Length: 338
Image 1 (cartoon, rainbow, N blue to C red):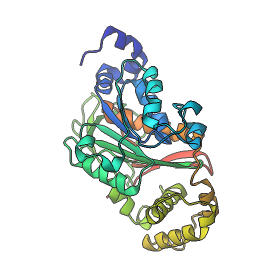
Image 2 (image 1 turned 90 degrees about the vertical axis):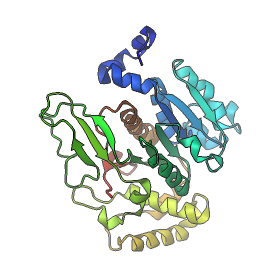
Image 3 (image 1 turned 60 degrees about the vertical axis):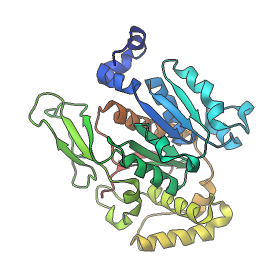
């Protein structure tokens, strides 16, 4: 698709970064954000400004917690549907993009609904819902790139699945002297092949990711290495998801004993007893129902970059688990393989 003069002027800086071809792909994209909450708030802002067409699926109503960090809603929207309330503010960000809304709950949407998108990012959903939609994504050709994220207090996490056969162009020529040690380490979960090795042009490479279900089923002792020690944020997220699966809601401060039972069960299941990992169940119960605007901004920006890579086919995708820890305020990605 050829960019118009107005589009070329509006996206001039982006075209200089990743080129007109990638920008054209971005403008032809169709991205679904399930839940306009947590990391997806920052993602929505960034990808709409970048020129992506976005559908917001959200059946929830605006709550007092949303007003603390979600800049697409205000006090006048309290108690109203989230997707409908945010529509005009999203549209105001960029008149060149199409913004669609869907307020039907995820469980009431057919599989066909999800098949029309090329990227899906989910948050504020159950593990079962995340796995269901990810499986739908992997049945498509080409496979739909999928992200699942969560925020609890100042901690945040997102999982990525670019599919079995995602092709992309490197940001730098293969002959560049920039070190690729981290991406090419023996612990890398994503298998990368080069389709034009030896060429002076930017290489087109193929990368393979495991499914979200495979990530979640991997034993914790098998994902720990010298380069990538087990993340406490990852473990906290697994504890919260298991508690939600058992009890159907987030824990509060009175659920410490139940949460400890969940942690002990998961530690046994994942061969993790005796680990030196510091898991503070008391703190986790305190922060489980809160959302930090800082965490949404920081990790939401990284997630936005991955969405841009998925649509533009430009730049090597990051490892498939990305975390931000409120303990040390560090964002880092690590791999979980098949």
